[in-house]
Length: 579
Image (cartoon, rainbow, N blue to C red; front, side, top):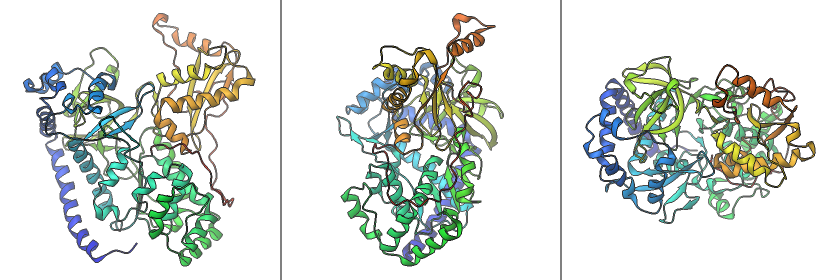
């Protein structure tokens, strides 16, 4: 990808702006307590005239103590009636007259319906500013990464529209479509690639475009996506090298004709690169990014279970450093990492107002809430967010640990979702969804399964295993039940469906336990406490939690070696999903 003279001029300007931007962020950490008060005040004033603002007296709030007293802790279900009105075009339900709603970012809810997070103009500016600060620091820390190709993945921002015509989809699509032209020019995958519904075809197309280029870095939230991309290139290397040689995109791919037309200008015959790639395969027995790219760094999540993927990176990427992209979700960016190989990042104090519930208080009727300057290093907390998306004192369910201070701003690392949420690949599966899915999977049978445990299992890809007692499910029905359960989990959780469709999660498997085994576990767990208060856990959230279960064997699925089998035809799940 040739650098244009104008790009070099713009780069000089951009580097100066970038340096100032990062210095401004760090300056905000030196007065983080005051900044947080200003952020809260601005959000309350902006939306004081909204129906929500009038209900909770935003206009009369003059201090944090007022805010804490007048506004209750909120979950999505509490805000849903207001959000439903916004979806119908009644913006005044949550927002003041100066605010606009650009789209709704979709993410998994606690039951069968996805959450619709309003993305306002103010929120987008804040979200982009946090990304810019992160990106600026990462580029400055890794020499030679400016003005070189970027391997990224985005999903459509407009999967459908509300009755008021507001797009609903992935915020990654909005971010990509509104990115600065200078940056977007270096994306290896243009926006149209997100419109390829077949996951395998989409991954292949990204790598077909990216492998011949000298990529500077690779960035996706989910490390499983990056592994899937490079494994796709290796598994279909004969086809890929032939496509690069001929300037084509395999006709076996399920790629819409409109996308093929849009990509034709990027598909030039390149015999030199094809010969180089063939030589690399002959030398190493695989097509690995550590051989065909000069990556300065890789960016993805390192926190929680996402960090387990890190051990699988070395065979593919060699010693390339990994920079955590920060604690972020559709609801907002919460941290800005500034160092490699750690999930810890500085609290993004300029965008949202934060409160922290000590872990021991979480789930109680009237928990203690602390502001950012009141937390302590080494302690664990659950986050509450007040954002420009109409979320106030919003319980996002993320548990974090404070590991340090950056001036007045705490440095936090993500630990996990709430006690009853599991996330191996970003799916955020809830216990309630598991119970509903088992109920649906039981529907064709003349029986119900009242006692079970669903456990995460690490592997390549990771997945879930359902443990049931033998008498609850005959062996002859095991396979069909597991398939129905897998389908039901996808129907109930859009992110689970996406990860299954893109092979970042394995299908659910099933383990039949001796009769009485789960009952015995519950009886043992209730011993020493009030048995009437004991609640059976249907979902375990930590891999290896089922290691002692009979018949489960090792809870780790063996990791595949780098493939050396040459394959020519692609296949994949045709359900679309959000990256």
